[in-house]
Length: 182
Image (cartoon, rainbow, N blue to C red; front, side):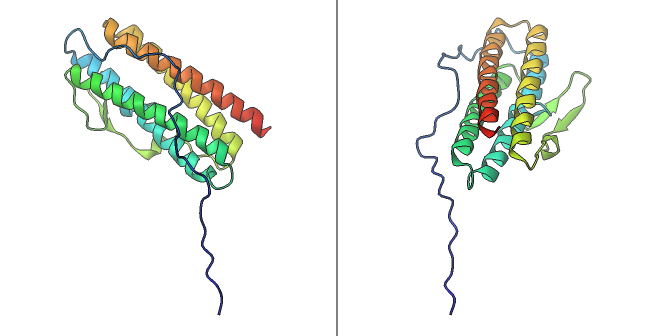
């Protein structure tokens, strides 16, 4: 009679904290409801380049790495946790701006697109995963900068600028992970 082998992931995520700059966030408030701003923020919330995409991509990468590269998986999950915080803050700003949360990115031309995993890039090799994550962070920063230029509400822009600081921090963390792989 053969013995059953139990497989177990030994990577513990106990006590893990979000990878965020140690800086406060501005208050979540808006000058007045503005459906145009809510639409712009919905793209950051769940568009192709969005917090929803980032979270899902990071969680996928963490799952695929945790059994063999636990320290790296922990780092990636901590970044995903920060992205979850960003998603929550954007959701609050969308609601305050008069929008609603339905996982649909709303574009200025009236087009709507529901979030889909088709937005994700999921390479097999660790180095390509990290490089893809860096490019995704850079794309998010660029999109936030474009939205800051379009939004004329200092309250919203202060939150977006603070999110950018975390995204820049994530790039530094990911660049360090690349050095570990090399």
